[in-house]
Length: 257
Ligand code: SF4
Ligand code: SF4
Ligand code: SF4
Image (tube, rainbow, N blue to C red; front, side, top):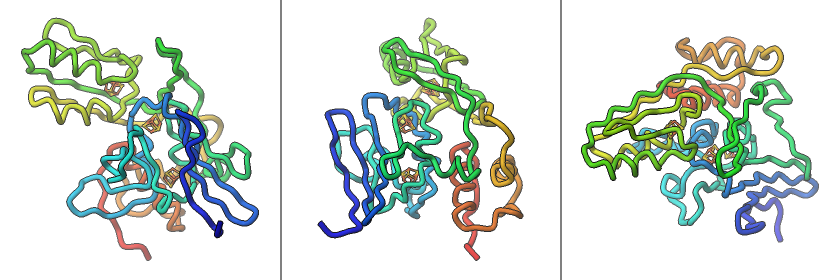
């Protein structure tokens, strides 16, 4: 085997390791498919972007097989040619579905170096035993003009955390359960008479004092135009863009200096 090598290893029926191996260094991004709630947060926070002109969401190193144009029966796949094993997807994942190992040790350098903060844990256990945490605060509005109750029920079933319920011909969302994800916004594209608006306003509580990098990123997310003074490196600015995308903010791509 020639090094460095990048490959996907099927560990068991539910687990895939996306591995980058050098002489004395191994990075593994582990994906536990059975826990994946298909929320889409990992897609939005991945700082690797590839411009695809006819798609509003730029392609990242992680996403659904359809988004990634990779043939697979998995809910989520990683493109090992693009992944840089940064762990941002692991940091955000509400379903505890992704883990990053560096030389066999579970590690998140983006948290250890202060680029991203650690969340205060706020875990909910679903009926199937799956643990899910809420990482953002905001609001959701569902407009339902559908008259076919079977269609409405089918739409409600799209939510992996059972936060939607049909009440007569309307849809009610349990705001406590709802993690403000992208699953129903994506699903609504297949329902002519149902629309969803999700606004992610801020992150849930974080542990300790945020670093200057995180403060800068949040300043940018909350509306400051352009690059933030104090975030000088290209990778930190890419991270800021990824966090903006995660929060659903629009931004203009700027030329890198
Ligand atoms: S963030 Fe985690 S739970 Fe959500 S789609 Fe990605 S891997 Fe699945
Ligand atoms: S480890 Fe980083 S580069 Fe790789 S898929 Fe996750 S967020 Fe993207
Ligand atoms: S109701 Fe909330 S948790 Fe359920 S799919 Fe929609 S945004 Fe996600």
